[in-house]
Image 1: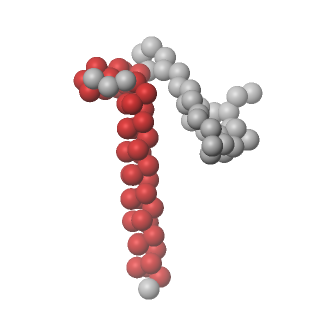
Image 2: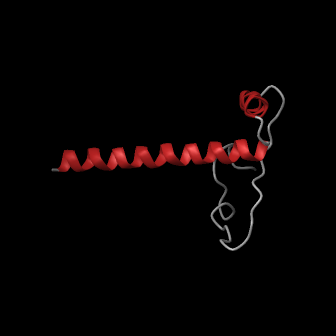
Length: 80
C-alpha cells in the first residue's frame, strides 16, 4: 500500500546525496487545484515550470523558518 499523499515515505526522501543532482518528480492531474495554480504561474510569470517549483520551495522554506523563529521566541517568553 502506498503512503498517504503528501506524507514522506520511509527510507526514500531522507537519503539525498549531497554531491549529486536530484530530479524532483511531481505529477499534477487535470482538474487538480494545484495544477491550475501551476499553469497560471507558468503562464503569468513567463518562467519554466521548474523555476516556478524552485521559487515555491524557497518561499515555503522562508515561511517555515519564520514560523520556527516565532515559535522559539514565544516559547522563550513563556518560560522567562
